[in-house]
Length: 214
Image (cartoon, rainbow, N blue to C red):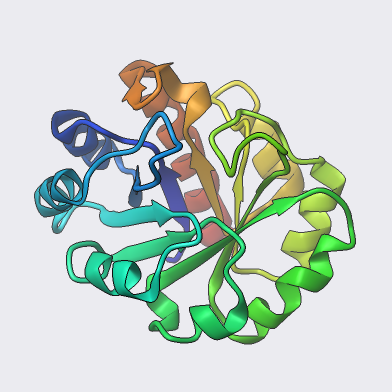
């Protein structure tokens, strides 16, 4: 059974642990100073340590140096590259430990994704925003998202996902995984645990039914 239920933008160790125990497969932490959810490497390491054996820890970075990614891979399970990183840069790291994110504006963006899909890495698609690299709560066009998921199966869907819209989105797009952040928050970096649990339960129910009938 292979799927991803990722809750992103965690800043608090206790919340991360609670959300991991709810059944999130991946917990994301942001290391990007322009983000309101940015936390230090020390804090990322602390959260990563409490998640061992419960959820995979993911550090989210934007246009990082090779050295920073290597440093992060010493303390987390995966690194999510959420900037304009090229295939050559991504190829420096083990493909099973990288998620490459793309902000999707139009069908033309599928051409940008292709070199990374040929590498066999997990990709994440998010809604395009001129103002930010992620965490905006904007939703990707569902038809476009479906086209990308149909083209490449290891696609995680992100952008504006909430407990309210998740059932219909899962049913229509059927992504390999889902990623939620801003729509589950009380304020940047702090989650509403009840909404987060509903989101995780909804996603798990969908994926377990898919694998049961597969």
